[in-house]
Image 1 (cartoon, rainbow over the protein chains, first blue to last red):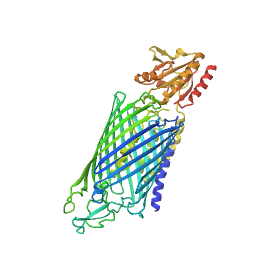
Image 2: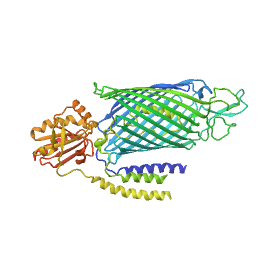
Image 3: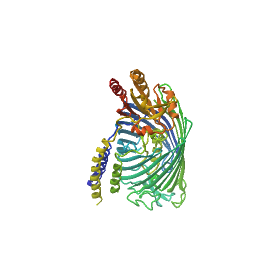
Image 4: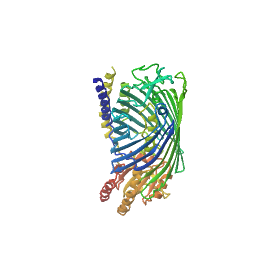
Length: 388
Length: 71
Length: 169
């Protein structure tokens, strides 16, 4: 308990030290507020037996010369007949609504951000408060940013009115953005996240070898997760401007946590413009993950470990994502109260290939003979943006 | 790890007060709207959510920087 | 051991911080007689700064990709029209290597004051432009009297106050 408190304090002390050091390089004058805009998006995810679609509306407005506020309304309408659901329950529909409000305050070359987000579904409520500060230094070539967020979740269980658990989350972020040449920008980011509380899905079960549940050669029991999780991520990204008004970008991220998961993400992309109105994007992203230490597709017997998980999100797998996007900019000279607008369509095809999660829809014996699971998903976004 | 932290901060400080090698009037390409790490936040936050909901990894997403450096 | 090294770094960093704070304050602005230059104007002919001696000259460094510069343009035009008869001249120096975007912007926001193209960015360097936009005020003898960095609404009043003062000299 004492150690946990000291740990928490240590993080904060570093943040304060950095904030103090940032105050050197005296700011010359102010920076520019983000543009006022409205975006209305329709999103759709279909794959692995799950369909999720819904709207996302984002409005940003500046107030005076130093304040910019934004609000987002987002809905996921979920119809799930996923492999987890089918093999243990029946398909269900659900809706998740997320609302967030944030404000940015600019003062000279510093920016202060505050935000509040809530996410609600019938058996889960999450609330997050976030705080960020960023500063332009070194003749505006470098931007240093720090962020801190606190979250509180209430976990419920449909069908069990007395079931109620909590989660507390803390995020610490540090980012450095550096302009290297007239055409090249790089970004380095760190994020540490701590979770404490009831961290698993209250419905999910693991399986273990047993003759007690004939005709199946395995039985099931509820998952048991550790009550804490600390994760660290570091990411390096860069983008380079090509002289004919195009861009290439690349991202790399390394992740590890106290659950034994290590993951690597790599992404490359190309953006191409055509005349003044058209923008085309192509991206390829690959994600590789190693399973959590307490994950197994099939445990040898009941209560084989203190902690048990069979969530495919914690398994060993590779996911690939190919994305294509097209943007058409209209009213570039202004039209009525709008300064310019854009119509956008983005499509992603994602493939998931699991190395130690098996497809239980295939019944065979002995347990563990089932084929490894894989699926693909189509993700589509259509949105219109108006600047005013 | 902590030593690296301190070194990094120190390195940053040594550049403090020096002459910027990309002058404010040379930022034409950097101010182009395509030179952002996520030019439509409504879309980049959705895609980040899609990844986070299905992956064990989280954190250090997004990015910022560049821009016109005006004012 | 690690924390001792860290403490040492911390102390060095603090010392550096103090020293650099001082140096950052004294980062040099341009002063004295404004360096002479000859640039091609939008009308086609070359314009020389020293030819304007005897008038109060405002040199405004702008670019088409700079939001505050676009905001400022119509206000500069108004100021030019108002004070021109009293011996004031305004030179809009465009700092872009390729002037095509600037010329397009001038079609949308036409101005009557001379617009010059510093496509080699030499004048920007000579005038130590550290912000976009930058506005330099020269008195009738060609001395740099005031430098404005950036543009915020309300600056145009500050410009006018300085111009009126310099015109009275």
